[in-house]
Image 1: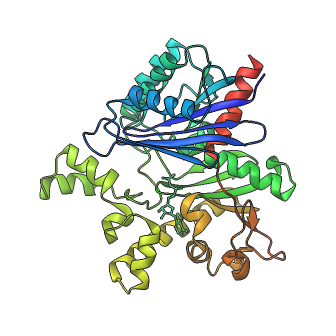
Image 2: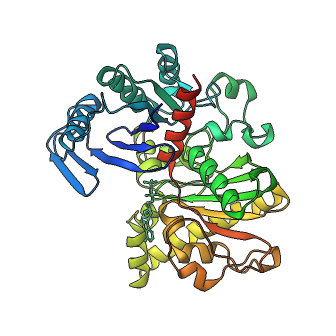
Length: 399
Ligand code: ADP
């Protein structure tokens, strides 16, 4: 069977896609559909080898976006219906308590993902639309859902339970689920491979620091805690999300500042975090502001680092020991300053960074701790698309 997989990541107004070989990781084509459903700014950028096609114009819905993207595949010589795609792998954000394995998509599975939208109203509906549109456009290719929550399904009860009315929580699925699981799983396995040890022998702390950010504690390959919660708002400070907040702040703001529910959601999802504190959400812009002496930007950075260190400490104690600390995603892979500041002054715990290694950028997995340090600190580029492609290919290959 061919190992070609089309991976789709459907957001509320965007679709990221990649056509790749699950075995070799070779990418044949990739693209981004943006501003779906908006009157202005609709755009598809499609890359295939050294060719780059750009389509500009309103994109009515996800189906129209996919249809146009598939047309761009054809323009670069790839007909998705005949090239031998073995599976379409969908990133699905919330699997609730139902899904923790890659799952072959059936009508029943789509219905259940849709029902789980109550837990992820910003994400699961877009995933369902993406799945349904693909089924119409590529009806003969099996589809597989890979869930962002899956890796965290086995967290101990004490780590995943919120201390609120137990009946209310049970009735409404209120518990910690965790997100970015595909990335945490992938980089923790890559780290073990790199160190030449079975993942079951390693206790790891992983920092996935992108626009969204999360940390996890992984004991012998099993995730035992993570910073994101029932929704992707909890935990670390992020580009536009605050991470941990005193729950009393929201009713207070609703009372005192007159915010309604929609305004609170907007505040928490789009206007908080680094952006709320500094006005920018991109870390490169933040760095620029700091270099120019901007005090608000410096405070945003300090709050970000303080939160990272708080969870590092928590996870060190939860695990009781740590073999490996892994940094991944946009900020984690690219910001030596964040890595150095997150781990500064911890040599008493066996945690050290070699400044030259930290500053030297090389492709692939790299170690940034000195060889003599007991804890291996690694930078591991994440590749969620490859992890989804491999999971989907394994599942349809086994079927
Ligand atoms: P997501 O997939 O969550 O949208 P990414 O993993 O692509 O996000 O990470 C995006 C973040 O990474 C942005 O804040 C961006 O500024 C940051 N980033 C990318 N490159 C660099 C860099 N060279 N230095 C510092 N930050 C970077």
